[in-house]
Image (tube, rainbow over all chains, first blue to last red; front, side, top):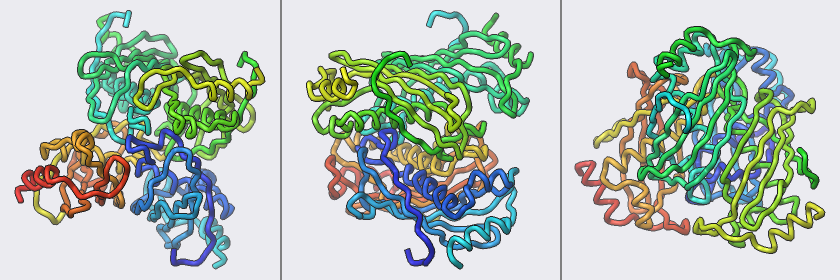
Length: 139
Length: 139
Length: 139
Length: 139
């Protein structure tokens, strides 16, 4: 992860529901873990995402990608490391790493977002959101 | 299934995402298949559930139960058989069977529902919904 | 919950992925939370389920039921309370409550299980598993 | 989609379970739909994926990406168009489009895969798989 700024860590215990018939975590579930990381990041930045929505700022995912390097299994407790990848007037980016207990990176990825209103229309981000993320990032 | 009334059948191809590390379908996914069956039932009754919601009638699940008799695996195409279990002024019931290709019942269950409005408050069912279900059930 | 024995508590932060278009947690996900509770229970009893599987004892769900009393939303952190409902030579039962932060019960349910081997055949539970659960239950 | 070769189409009816609190399909579920497309592609190529696994060839996802252009809602029936993106000795690629009923592209993406054996070790693809995909692609 090339950018500066804080890294927020979340612990995730693998659920049996998240495994598949290859006895490893089904790949789409990493995107859900990225969401867990995003939730933790907003919380750590002082602006929980549930409050953002209550304030009329919804974040939609417009692009997501992930590289899966090592399998993760039921019984593993992974660490999701989330970093803010930058804010624009109409969107933002997050980057993620999923680390196994021994520190090995199991997966990494990024998601790109736009801000929308309650009716799904693109909107500018509110100053309050910008302020929270900037302050937290020390920028 | 003891009650009279039409049975609506839906074919479901097992997704890899639905399997777990025991190489069989994870049990919670049967509740999702029951929902597939419910959707098909409302469609067959002439009142698709998406239209019900557009008309202000939302159906919430207040109780669900299932018995899992035989494992289902990736590659299987199962048949979900859905039957209406009865209407009350504030709720209704559906019953389900999940059959393997050879006719063996893999699972069965039932769900109990109440009608709510867009804000989640209990409401009486609309006459249009009652009429559709009664007409379809031949009652 | 009528039976004696320890209650194991797990905290679950609602994921956006777990919500549905009614803006509440989709009902099938409570069964996944019950599994989170079961995992925590086995861990607390000193015999993590991943180790059970490594020792050749697999637990399959043969029956599940749940009552949904109050909606749960993104942003909520619920407590899953898991209790052992009894052991037989070929199966066991767990009971669950999902509590909202204010203590209100959002849902409750139970699951019934049989023990199987790696090939999915029913088997007797191993003495080691019985011992762990009995010792933990103080029975 | 720049490459030649057949396109396999799969119809997917949106499940309520796949929606989220923004009342649209949760983004991670598109990866599951891509898997539905891959399953249909292998079937159309004459070598169903379940049979590949029975023959000892497992396909693991090592990379996935998707762009989400338009929201998809409960009640929509989308078409997943899957195309083969090329075979190498140790892996292959698939490309996907998700189209709304009016033909508008709701999402597109690609997945990269390696072949592994039953124990998760990388292996060369079997000639039978190569033959099926090449023959189907008319190459």
